[in-house]
Length: 491
Image 1 (cartoon, helix red, strand yellow):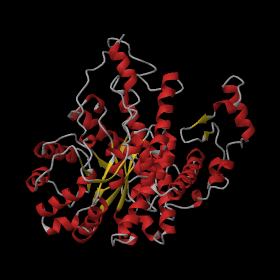
Image 2 (tube, rainbow, N blue to C red):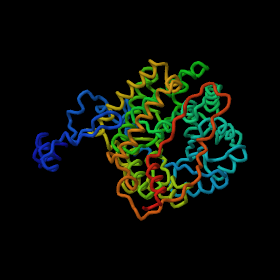
Image 3 (tube, rainbow, N blue to C red):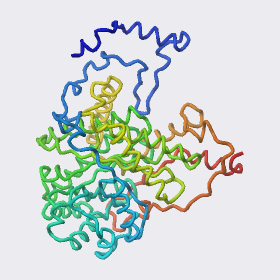
Image 4 (cartoon, rainbow, N blue to C red):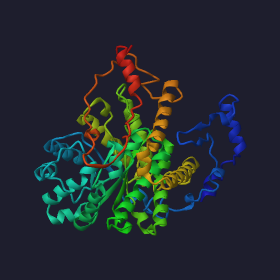
């Protein structure tokens, strides 16, 4: 079939491609187009089949171990990725109204985070009145509050509905430690009890979250993110096993929550690499049968979003959604383009939702089983990321684990170094943030600063058994916005 398709085209050698590229850059060397990624890899300007020497995963098929090409042989044709939205709404009644409108407009899963103030069972009932929780999966991204929220759900719902809940009410103690700087003394006891409670009452619902958001938001590169995810999962298994929850009971309850970064091809490779890494880790634990059930939720990152020329954020969100979808994630949550300006409005939320609908319904991305499969420019970095992340994970283990690295401040220092390079590249012009350090709209008046609404940056919990220096969220545009503001806006 392939031969018939290409029979009318004359074959082209690699040397001919190199010559053509050289001519297009006025006789320059092709090697001059190489770019060093933040992960430490050289991105080749002209990928070639030979680049895949030693890369074995690309020979697998969709639905086959290690599931880099997807856990289902039919890809998104069997189940399109779920469309999620996070609402920065505190009042349960207002949340319910917005949620009903979003579900009617194409949202297909429900996200609950720390913005929503749920303190009582009545609050739960108000937030989910007239919402079909049997139909729509539920993703609770509420840090240490997940067990308490699930307990309120159990009190508010009838046993039949509770048993049909899908998604994840995930608790990630180590992610909370990285974010707040403190780990509650009973964190893993609470997690173990939560896992057992959810397994008993809601067998289809996940209960363990492994979240890369604190690390990504602080500036981490893809290798660091992947290694941290793996180290968090293995450490969590180890802690749960010490409390009577075996790895075979924990594995099907674990969900990965990942941020989407700005480097299109690296992000596609990152979402493919985590599947490879987790499959290999489960095989080492003798649990490879659970690799097929891996779930990845992707949410747009914050570090590359700008308050100036904010509509450019829509373009950033578009590439992020596309990279996550091509990477084969199970659900995607896009932030409204105006999130850095404060609370989003209905229009911005609708755009974020419709962006995913366009990818599904108009681009018809769900008709493709594995659009990146076999692409040299994706398969090579997938292999590179996976190998480098596995080595970094092994280094964590050799040094006493992720907790020891956080307590020593080693991981924080590594991530800070990458963050400093990102900022320095923008300052020198080696990297571009449109509307901030290049292609600036000088007639734009810088918007007034808005009060922070993110409750996830609240004070760390009391009674902590471990304290560390928390990771510091990074927003790359902020220094440029401050400069513009101090100089009088558009001047």
